[in-house]
Length: 638
Image: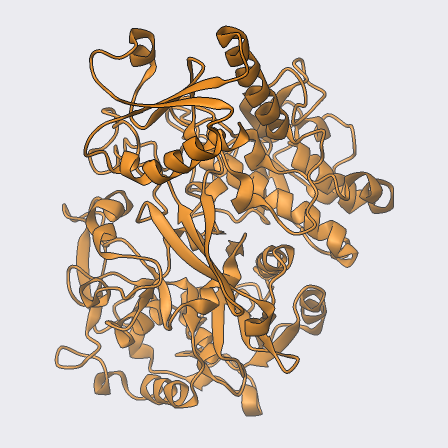
């Protein structure tokens, strides 16, 4: 485990959106990501101690949101999202069905203008297809693409590959799920996907907001991973980000997976343009003997993989692809890939600023198991997130900790709640889901690991290890151990007609319980977590209350101190400070617009400034409103 806490820390929703262009086809936003810390944390790794977040490469991010005229022409949708599903090879059950539904709900909540399609293998049963059709616009059948004969007849007969592709991969049998993931290549077939572009979304990836912007990228596009070499993800920003920018070309060096500097483009999120020739060429290559297209003297040679027993943490695997379709596509299009910001499929990192969350390392998935409550994330005098405890105003959510020292994985706890907030909305929007969604989801006690399936019992005293959502009785002892979002889910799954009117338009939003940054400044912007027609309960919308009260109180205090109606606002800066240069235009505009209400002073930081102010300043720009250190983003409320 890294000694860095930037991975586990949950920032407030903080992204600042600014419209920089508005055309008939799209609206372009410049987004401030605030990834660089104002002050280094000396206790963290030197590779990460300057960061506020892992999931952004640059201080600014530009996205284009397409308008309806771009997304739909002549009443036909031009773009599509594609989720893939095949049964668990060991059990024959569609164990990722709930994951597909959760992902589709994420797109529905943000009101996408693209088709949402689930493509399934022939052996997904009719009942499961009907369940998918509740939230998906289309469900289509496809054949397997696999080295193992998975059956099927006619157009659904298995497209057979050479088994040698897995000869250097451990235990890749017919029952290994990776043996069949080449079926994702169907998204390239325009006969199945007659769209300008298709965005593939993995069945354990939940799109949260602004996903339609991905269709404005050149294809192919995806997120390139960190090197499979020590120190792995911790080095990503330091090692990669100087060369990566959302929507721009990924250097070929990073995607030549047969070279030490290369890594995969993660196949959990891909944006591609369907092309029949490309599809046919890939199928022809993959169904040929392996030695005709992979080897030391071929274009495809193998890839660098993890080796945790090796001091440098890596090794070369020749003549095989063990991350099958991911290895193959990365190498095939190396030099042509366009970069998608990690924030569109963050691995539960910086969850309140994520455009999407990929459960790649989430074990088990939240539709299999969830921990009960235990993490206190905030205390307020009123408007608590949950009631019924000794201190009824505490905010308590699902708890995940590190087993050997009880270190809190705050990001994992928040991620469970973010998913549950979406689930609650989905159960209200699609009542039929209550008949089968989360049918086998179990609630356990505290999760004792971020990545491993280790949970405490939900009720050790009565020897109850776990209990399903649907078996929990409202207001019994186990029900009281649930977070508020879990209690809402129990109510909707067991007594829908009673509780739907009370919950509808009174939704939860766990990220609105975070408003202070690492250095305890009020600093938040909820744009990233706002959704069309998604109404948050006033009772639990804590931070709206805090924001209004805070600004009003600060303003009143300033007026009283000055004995007049003008507020004195001081902006401290330093020469050569890039953050100050970035803030200067905003300050000039504010000073000009507020000159009748404010005494605005710009002062160079030095040893001679107000000693009381100096004692509070940890970095510049620093803003004081009537002697109170105030986050610069709060100026708009004055």
